[in-house]
Image 1 (cartoon, one colour):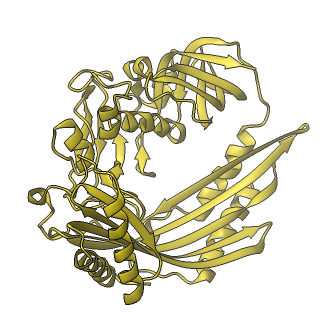
Image 2 (cartoon, rainbow, N blue to C red; image 1 turned 30 degrees about the vertical axis):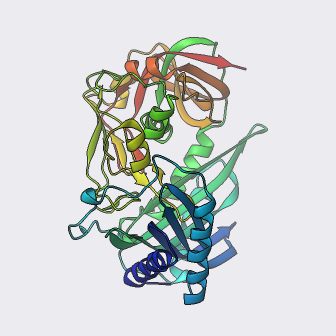
Length: 448
């Protein structure tokens, strides 16, 4: 596996070859990773996988014509062939008035900050086996758990590099560790499944395997004894696992491409209140050890923390260079890039700031409502904001969690849902997108 410096050299080499082959501009992305994954089931080793992969992508321009290619051969001959093929393709491509590299005067020039993305470790598979076993055993030890789909532990090291023909070249490495368990519980002929997991950049930050496993077992057992609820409008409370999904449609709706195509339900809401004034949502690419932290974006522009929603008000759009040109604005450092194709728009670490009430206080006045722990399907219309998803969780009766419930549908419109949303005070940073417990009144619940 290549080091960050080696990855940077490969990307620069490919850009140089593309320019020599006749490109007027070019950028290249190199990505590689090495991973080890251990699976345990019913106390026995089920699988051990070790994999390494590397790929490189090239985007070239011939005036306003462009083409992208990718491959895995990083030998000198492989890079030469890739460059020649890309330039030949670009000469045959249609012109795109918005195509081009990021503005040169906006490229990141400062040294990359240390975001603590790599702990430098390479754990022995025996350590991962011990974590996977401990996680599964803790889950199976919960009374009511009758079977297991297994426990797992993983370690991944990755490197990414980006080089452009107009002066940017950067690279960084990262590590990631994870532990998870999935088990089944049964009672009176009913069987339910649930899981728990945790992942971190540093092994030292990984939650105890026993705690993760115990939570998986308790979740599965807690789903037994399903109740019923009458259909109709009522308050819906999202737990932290499920609530993060509400920010996905928001981020899609404020992407530059959606605004340029006029396919966003928030098209006319920039600078306007979208949430209650108690709600603020932040994109923070510089969080140390963050799951999605990055010093530069997919076009070589510097990244910076940004308040997407500032006390309820929508601040603006997330734009890569192409969508910014189309809108007549400046890119915002939100370009996301893989080894294939052109950059798109993407966020980094996103979180909703905590509110002022505990989850218990948030639910205290709910006579009948729904507490959602899992969502199914992707029934969200990004143009209209219409929202409908399958869900499971618990009935709320007189401010308390009561019987578990499943096979229900919750529906509303995201404009109304965002305006009614109230956050609790229990924010934790565990994922790429983090929210506290959320309450939304007036949603429609349909029970089968």
